[in-house]
Image 1 (cartoon, rainbow, N blue to C red):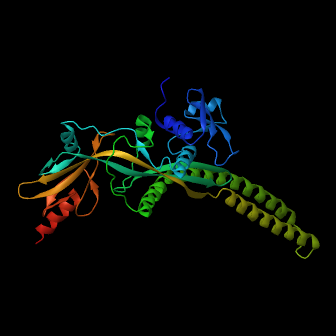
Image 2 (image 1 turned 135 degrees about the horizontal axis):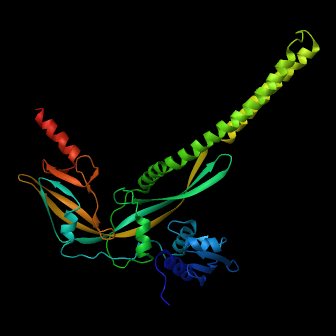
Image 3 (image 1 turned 180 degrees about the vertical axis):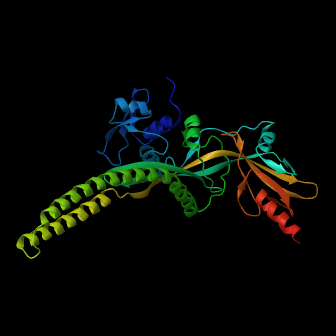
Length: 354
């Protein structure tokens, strides 16, 4: 029988390496004897790797990219000392035309780029798994993952697709050097900013729905109490102000108004949205990259320019502007350095003003 690929293969292999056992019940569905932390702690769980399986097995745990169950498997493997990191199960193939394809990923302004032979590296990536809880009249929660390149702080938005295509491995297919990593606090700050951007839409949608429901229920409640007030006010007509009956009616009006305000405040609290975000885990992955050291040359100036080829997505990664530090696919020369178009425009305007 052919072994499954991707996350399914990685998870089942890790469970077995950790001392557990897995029996396939159907395609994408396993009964797993979970690795025991201590003798006598054995636990049986159902793991599903296909969302359609969940419809027939609602008690099964869906194992997908950055899901809590997959994160738990990685944490167990890391703690055991058997698997400390995960690698994309693919290599970096180089052909004669790779450098030309890389160069076509960019627009060089009045300059030509040439390169040396490439060198393969592993790119470190941090996958931050967050849980967002939405609290109002009901409780909902979402799991959101953010993948950050630990080399240059870029958000990687297609990582899940690459993992599904190639799968994960506990060991690298090739013994390449690792790119230097940014501090963990910087990576978390980038991931948190991206998470906030992702949450704008779901929070906005939920808030609009709650505001609509609040308006409807508040309108009905206000109408109900307004009718009660009108009834008492009609009863007041013709009643002398200094009679006990008038005092009772005034007291009843105050009670209705207080109850009305209390009910409206209760509805405002009921439909107030609160969002609570927590970081569940961080998964470290390594992706193959080809680094081309090269030179960007114009008519009068030249500067070193290193470009990186992504063999998974078959495209070049953005270059770094040497003036402002931004990432760009358009670059030109100025004063012996490489710059993006906005910096080049600013340099030209500055030169023209003198």
